[in-house]
Amino acid sequence: MAPVRVAVAGSSGSIGTQTLDVVRAEGADRYRVVALGVSSSVDVAVAQAREFRPEVVAVTDPTARARVAAELTGLGIEVVAELADLVAPADVVINGVVGFAGLPVTIESLRAGKRLGLANKESLIAAGPVVQPLRATPGAELVPVDSEHCAVHQCLRSGASHEIARIVLTASGGPFRGRTAGELATVTVEQALAHPTWAMGPKITVDSSTLMNKGLEVIEAHELFGVAYDDIEVVVHPQSVVHSMAEFTDGSTIAQLSLPDMRLPIGYALGYPARIATPFGRIDWSALRRLDFEPPDTTTFRCLGLAYAAGRAGGTAPAWLSAANEVAVDAFLAGLISWNQIADVSVATLDTHDGSTPGTVEDVIAADAEARRRAVEHLQRITDQTNGPTPPP
Ligand code: MG
Image (cartoon, rainbow, N blue to C red; front, side, top):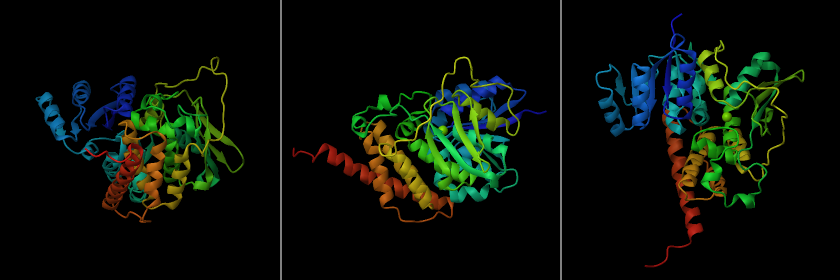
């Protein structure tokens, strides 16, 4: 059988580099990388392109693109500007782009009837109403590359959709599990980036520390599996071994277990409906002692409830939440606001939501821009209050 042709959007990031790990482990006779895409990581893109010899490399930043093109001269690799151009030569597209910039890859993959391994949760969350109809394109298939949703996807193979009673998403609780709001007022960027069980990129790691990641995953689960918000529950499970569960109408709960390793969900998406031959995250049952579960502290971790509210509001509300949160997390990582103020920015932005519903990609992009504009305003107000009035010269 010919190798499966793989495109990797966001190939320099955490999901992208791990996708290439899986491809290396599985071998060139099973998977062939035909397209790679980055925003501006010249050295990584060049090294990856030299190793995998794809047909096309996309670099969105113009300066970086010129440098990549110069480095790859003579190798017969086309260097392009648009991440969506990675889709055409591929059988399966792994979308590991961080943030809203991943939307064109999601849309083009489904529109072209490809299998999409989706790690870019923002694009589905922000653009759900626009993306959903594209899933009906013949050949199009959306396989989640997120440990929880990959788990649910596997669990749901145990029963029919009308037999699903509830989905239970597990959350590690992040580095700040058990802390009070008062204790969390002074935490640093370094502390927020020290995740106890998962090694991930900075944005998603901060989102894990606020439980916004879990909140966005609740919306993602609703969009992916069509389960009502009332039937999606979150439980804190510090060991990150049970990746999520599905409960069926007869009371049976099916769980998926493995050690935390993103290469498992990536391999699941690459191989689906078959399973890949290389094991990742195998459990050593002689070493595993206990699995703990507790309800989330939704008072301290306000972002979780905020996400349920945005999901239930529907329309562009999830897009607004995702955009406001990106603005807030960037500001936190830049040292402009405290950890507690990440939720403040999202609350203030969602409070002014206009109740609109996106009908087109342009509507989604406009909603994203509007939410960012308002989030920046709220951010400005918050930092002004924190720093006090500017003293006269
Ligand atoms: Mg996850």
